[in-house]
Amino acid sequence: MATPNYGFEKRQKELAKKRKKEDKLKAKSDRKSGLLAEDGSEIEVEDGDVDTAAPGGAQPPAPAA
Image (tube, rainbow, N blue to C red; front, side, top):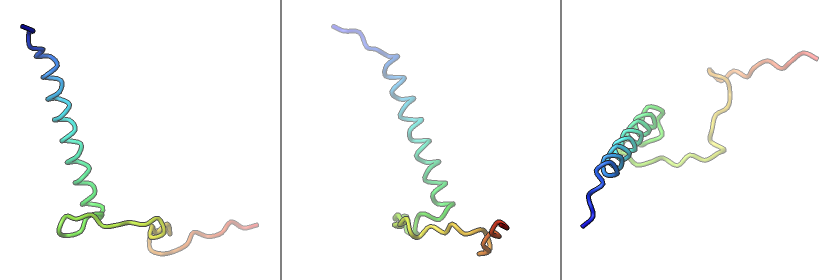
C-alpha cells in the first residue's frame, strides 16, 4: 500500500486558500471601482465607454507650437 503524501495535500490546501483570498480581493476591488451592479451581477463594459478625459471633464492644454 502506498503511503499518503501529506506534503502534497498541504500544498494543495495552501494554493486553494491563496486562490480564494485573491478572488475575494479582486471582487472587493471590483465592487469599489463600481464594476458590479447592486445585485452582484457584472455590468458589461465596452471599450468605447471608457472615459479617458482628465478629471473634472477638462481637456489638457495642447502644446504650443
